[in-house]
Image (cartoon, rainbow, N blue to C red; front, side, top):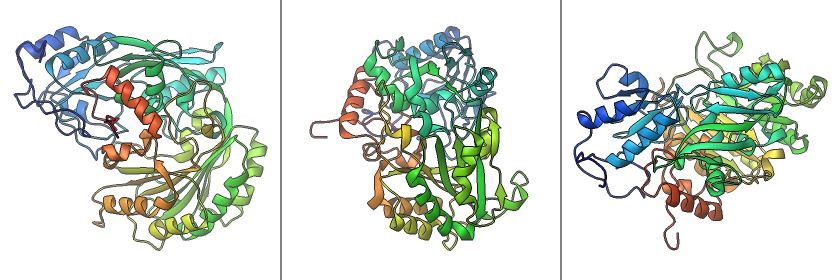
Length: 489
């Protein structure tokens, strides 16, 4: 290996395939190589067994445990460049983590770059844009933009990392009104596998700019984004919680309701099994419930009129609908705080007809033994179904719904969530339009054959070519890796 200073490493052999032959040698864990990397960083290097290593390697999703060869706790682009260059010269694969919400594979024997200390946020209220660094969470961007009546196209959980979410497409609370978060990216600073910091936008590294917006962490370490903000000082939003026994009635009413909606209304359906937890509202504690979520970009009175037919279905257990500042939108889905272990699966649906709804209720509804904590349908269409002014790799714009499944492995009832989730995915195949966008996939979706169902064939070929150009040795492969396109593939 050129430039390895005589120190050999064992490259991880547990990628998604196409990662090349493993180099079976001794891991770099001490000595001059480590001192070399530490000297190049303003941040800290952690090794297995060192103080802080366990804290640094743990992400939000505890279902996947990471055992990296070393961790670089970086403070800025210069640290990222030094860490990637070090990894490339020593044959170490690279994993990247901010919050660790999106997990695909264990970052074993890798150099794990932790970006959570990169906290810069700058709002330009006149241009309606924000510059955000790699460690920023949406809650920070929301807070900084709010005084100007502006908001980012953030998702259901404000504690999610803004950069990873956006690179994976970014299916947000106001998606039908404004499209994917990736549609509003102006420029991207990214360190590619050569250790080079590049600024990609529609007129410079245009192929890389296209691929990063939807292809996520396959092409380098993004150090910052410039994103467009939208005017949304307040929205009408919240949830309706119905008893679980009403799941079939509510789902059929909901799917009919979504047929004729203005783009300003973004919504979702979820069948949820709530734990006995003091943080869960008392009416929901320990119960199965149907949760309808709404985010309407418009006058509250108009939003009230739109949801009125669903409000009348039956007496809700809880009604949280209200006019709210955008800063309160985390209460709409009310995602549980982490960290926690979650097994995730996701598929796109071409349609949700009566038969599809019946199959889903039979598999996961109140009369089933389904152990999943969450069975969710997000309504797509509107601006999510239209190509943005600057095209991106975000897949599935012709889908009608996204189905997302989440369960806690090894629950108290002893049922395994993985085979149940797989059965639902298999049984919904007649209505499936491919795997979900990368943000909604878990470790079970990381195999190359699964990734091939995420993107259209032409886009997959283009992504593979960008991967070949900017990461030919697949340094970045602890993700939902873009498979190589061999002849005939």
